[in-house]
Image (cartoon, rainbow over all chains, first blue to last red; front, side, top):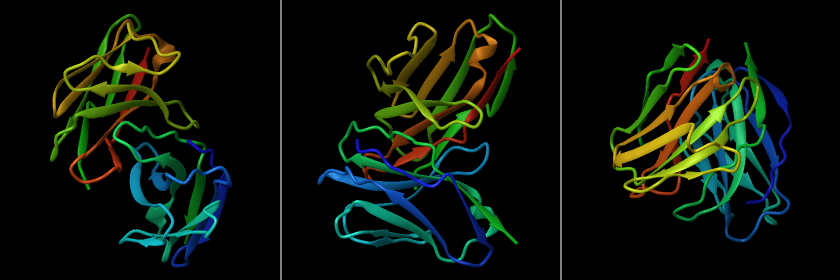
Length: 111
Length: 116
């Protein structure tokens, strides 16, 4: 699976949009971009994933550049409960493909 | 999304004893479950992949005789830490996929193991 690079930490004011970047310049054509987050002392939570089109769900939006070498996870209105470590993972979708977690981005949402 | 539970949520045991952690898929059948370990201030590391009805596949450096995995049914996988030592103290997390729904993995809430 391709390697990803994320900033170690970011700050965001409550109510504002949080934009979390991820670089994955070696991504292959069959690899998806997945985002998970982990709130302190809990298991990871799936957020969203995409291949090349932008995706949106009730939690977030995923913007993938046209060359697919980078992406941005957008939390449109961050709340204090969004404080967590966010992991960007690139993975080929197959029945037995595992997830490789990097160090992620620690997002701190402040009042 | 699919729901995965773990039991216990935390456990303290004495050095040399064994501890069993259960991982259950509550609303789907899980052919495959994944076991991760997370040390403080570090990321999750995959320990092994558990397959229903067959032997688990362990990652390099993980001792299969120390971390026994049993996946006897489509809703339950167990991880037994045998002869636990203080260095086994960690946060253990299981994950699984609802193969009928997609490729996303869903995770349990984790089990905090402290070996004294």
